[in-house]
Length: 176
Ligand code: 5GP
Figure 1 (cartoon, rainbow, N blue to C red):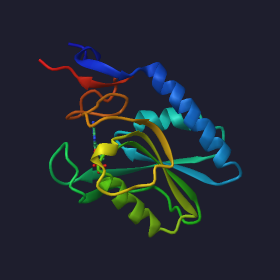
Figure 2 (figure 1 turned 135 degrees about the horizontal axis):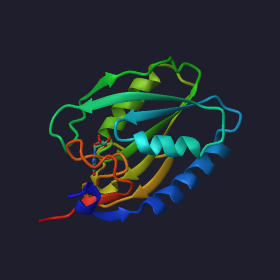
Figure 3 (figure 1 turned 180 degrees about the vertical axis):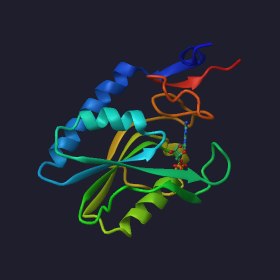
């Protein structure tokens, strides 16, 4: 079966595109005149990052960081490993982290603490999704696409065992 047929739609491609456009406009206004680095968290943010970067008409740089959480596949342990580091220093740069989803917040807590040691001018977070019911450490969500209930979502970059990342909408896996 086609991967998209295995999912119930939560946010359509059109809904995502409209929200990404709004986020891009707000970021563009906020960062006018600043040296901005968009920092995508691999792999889940790859589609969000590519769409969001095209919605921001500023002279920005893009970079990526790979993170993996030790422990259960669908449950964050808070113990995070950098699997692939930034390609350039971020000292004195304004960094906007682009993340797919904040769940417990533990992964972002680790990343934000790590980035702070590199002396950027500022660090903010843009996450496409947030699950407020699951929060274990409060992270400032400077830019947020959508809040969702405690459900496991896939598509638009998000995976289940590496599947569904290329589905153009966000959905949940059908039962049965
Ligand atoms: P946290 O550390 O905030 O608990 O977890 C963040 C990471 O867990 C996300 O970057 C993502 O990789 C994964 N994650 C959390 N919830 C979901 C979900 O509903 N679907 C998918 N595919 N990944 C999730």
